[in-house]
Structure formats: structure tokens, C-alpha cells
Image (cartoon, rainbow, N blue to C red):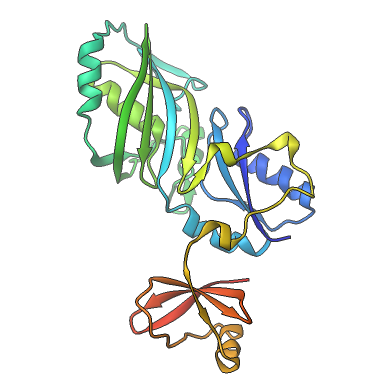
Length: 277
């Protein structure tokens, strides 16, 4: 069984929990996910099964769309509502000012990675340092906020919709917005509504997934042009060799007898294999 399954991740489960469940349903250990969601979060979780696990690095590069809610005046160690409360700050929110600040929030900036995250420093995950109460300088990454729109402001909560680049932490974004608002905030809700071209309305509920659930294939995922192989080129593909193809396309489906065999990517004057079915 090979392909991609889109799951609407339930609240309270880790992404690994979902992978384990899918692994049992399809009776294979070759299952992975493309883009972690925290247990508190719900929404689009891209699951790769079988040979499609090789596509994980490519699928995580896409932009992601979220609907999030931030609770003002509360700072926690995990930057979400499930964490230990570190500090509380009374907040007198001016809606007009808040709307203006959020509308003008930087589109590109260096964001500090949360200490409760799986990012590794010296071969060790940050959350492992945090659980051991070991202080470590948190890395910063440049992130891009393509859009940020307030949906609702209600007492001490602000809900917003945003589309962000790979590697953006919504928990950190919320903390940074709160800083500009001269207060604290933590994430109380998060729902991923889109990842690349994968939309929440196309997702399956985990409880409904079974062995007969249809999987997406490369034809459903990518819109690459095709290149038909001759027998000599087919041997090169089977050996993982580069191909000399006269094309300006960044990526190509290579086919044999009109059947997709692999995906090749332009590499200077040749094409190299990135995925083989």
C-alpha cells in the first residue's frame, strides 16, 4: 500500500499517535507524517504510506494556513494553554489598537524557536533540555508571514487566520504579537486548515479510516509534465542514475509505457532522481 492520506487530526493526539494508528490499520511500519501538529492542535495532517514516505521532505516545505486563538495576559512554559503558568499580566485591550498592530505585524522576521519543540541542539531535542530544567540559548529562524487577519476579539482572546512559511511556530508568533501589544499571551486553540494544496475539506476523520480508504498518488499531488523513457533510459532510472533530458522544467514525471516510474529534478544540465515508485 503506497500513497498519501489526509487526516483531520483530533485534539489530544500527537502526530506520532496518528502515525501509529494508521500503521496498525494498513499493517505497515512504513508510515510518516509531513509536518508535526501539537496535541492541542487539530486539522490537516499529511500522512505518507509505503514508498511515499520518501516524499516527506518535499511535502513539509509548503506554506501552511492556520486559524488560531490566543489568550491574553497568560504566559506559560510551553506557550500554549496546556503548559505551566509562568506569569500573569492584567490586560486592558484596546480593540482598535490591537487591530492596527496585528495588521502591521512584520511579514518577515527572525522568530525564536519554543523551548518545548523537537528542534535539535547538539543532537538533543529542545524539549529534552526543558524537561531537565537545563537552560540553553534558543535558536532563531527567519520566517515569513504571508497574511495575518483578525477574525474575532472577545474579552481576553483574539482569534486570527494566517498563512506562514515552513518552520513557523504559531505559539511563538502569538508570543511575539503579545509582546507588541505590551502583554503576555498563550495559544488556546489551533487548527491547520491548509498545507500546500491540501485542504481541510479533503481530510478524513481518523475514526473513519480503514484498509479500503483510497490514497492519493503522485498524479493527485503534483502537476509535473511527463517524459517518456526508452529502454536504455529505463535501465538508468532503475539504477538511480541521472538522465540527460532536454527540458527547462524544474521537475518531471518520467514514464515508461505511459506509466509513471519516478520523479526527476533538474540538476544543472541533467536531471537527478528524487522519488521512485
